[in-house]
Length: 604
Image (cartoon, rainbow, N blue to C red; front, side, top):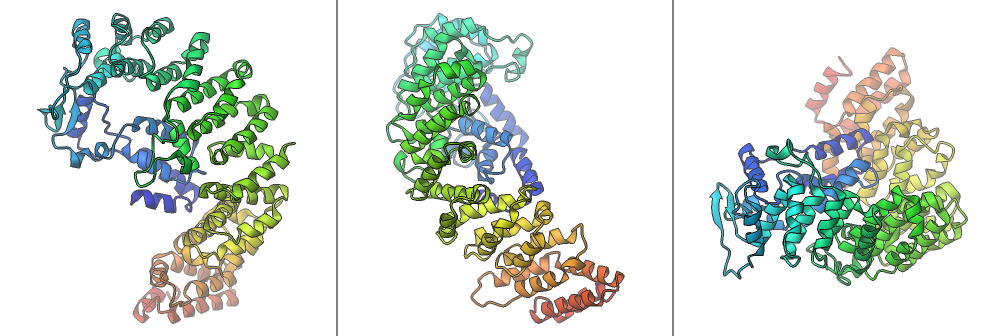
C-alpha cells in the first residue's frame, strides 16, 4: 500500500514536496528495537547478510516518479537492487515468518579462527543433511552449520583483514567449494576501512593490486563469475590489460543469464524475457553476470577514451548477445561514445533498438533521442519512434507517445501522429501528459509554450483520473504561473475535469499566491461553480465535497474579500458573495456551519 500511494501521488506533487518525500524515504529509519538491531549486527559479524536498514528504501524509492528522482537516488536504487538481490519474501518478512530468528553460522564472532582452522573447515566436504540443523544461539538468532553460512562469515572476515585472507587464499587448493571462492572475491571487492569492524580498523590495510591479481588467477572462475565481476568493478583492476581481457571474457561467455530467463521477476508474472518490460530488462542487466561485466566495461570507457576507441567491437558483441537484458547493458556501453564519436553512438543505438525495441525505453535512451533529432540521423529516429508506436510492449508505446509530443513541441514533427495519440489508449495519452506536465513545471521554453494550449485542454478533460491529476497538479508549481500564457491556461483549467481532482493542491497554492487574487476573481467564481457541480454519476462527488471542506478554499475566499474591500472593488466583493452563494446552494456547508464561517470571516 505505501508503494502504491508513493507511485500514485509523487508524480503530481510540487518539486519542493517531491524533494522532501525523496529525502524522507532515503532517511527512513528502521522500525526495529535497538536490541534487535544489535542482534542483527552481531549476526553480521558472524557472517549473516541480513540487514537492518534499506528494505523500505528498496521497495519505495523505485515507486517515485522516475523522471524526477535525483542522480544520487538513481544510484542508491541500483545499490539496493544488488544488496537485496538474493533476498526472498521470507527474508524481508523474517520477523513474522522465521521460527527461530535470523540464521547465521555457528562460528565465533570476529576473525578468531586461525588459518589452520579455516583451512580445515573449508576443505571439509559438506555432508548431506536430513532436515535443517538449527541451533538457538541468542534471542532471535539461530545458527546453521552449512557452507552457505560459513562462507558468509568468511566474507566478513576477509573484509576485516583483506591482506591476511588474500594471502591465506593462495595457500588453499584451487578446487575448493565455489561458494568459498565467491566469499573471497566479494570480501575483497567490498572491503574498506569504513566497513571493517571496530576491532580491526586501527591495523586495517588494503590489498595491493598484485596480491588481488594473484588471488584472481589462483581460483577457477566458472562458478564465481558474479563475485569476480564485482571485484573487478569495485577495485578498478580492469585497467590492467590481462584483467581487462578477463572481464571481456566474462561479458562474452559467462553462462549467466540463461537463455530467455529472467534472474529478477515479479512473482505474479512470467519469468520469460520475451515479454519483459524495459524496466524489467534494466533490473536484470545489473543482476546477471554478462550484463554486469558490460556495465563495468562501460564505466572504464567513460574514464578512458583511448580504451573505448580501441575496443569498439565490444559494443557489437553486446548488441548481438542472445539475451535481451544483456542487450540493454549495451546501452551503457554506448553512452561514452556520445562524447567521443556521436556518429558511431547514434548508428549503433539505432542498430541496438532494431535488435530489441525495448532498449529505446532504457535509462539514458533520452540522451540519444535528444541529440539524434538535432542531427543528421533525424530520419532514422523518426522511423524508430514510429516502430515504437506500433510495438507490442505497452511501456515502449508510452515512450513513443512521449517522444512524439516532445518532437512536435521542439522540432515541429509528428503533427499527424500527435493527433492520433491524444485520442489513443491510456498509455499513449499518459505519455503525452507526462511530457506536457514536465514543460509546465519547468521555467523553460517560454518562446514556444503557446503551442500546448490545444493538447492541454484535451488532457485537462481526459477520462482517466491519473492523467487528470498529472496535468492538473501543474498549477501548484511556480513555473506554471510564470508562463506568458498562464492566464489563458488557468482559464481553461478552472472549467475542466482536472480541477475537480486537484482541489487541495490548488487552494494551498492560491492561499500563498504572490500576486493579487482580485485579478483572477472571475476565474475563481468559474472554478467554484465547476467543483461544486452535482453529478450523480460521479463516484468521487461525495469525496470531492469533503476535499472542498478540508481545503484552503475559505482562506482563499477571505483573502480575495480582504483585497476587494481594501481596494473598494465592488465587483470583486460581489463575486466573493456569488462564490458563497454557490457554496451554500451546493450544500457543502450546512446553514449553521456557513454562519459560523461567515461570522469568523467575511462578516467579521
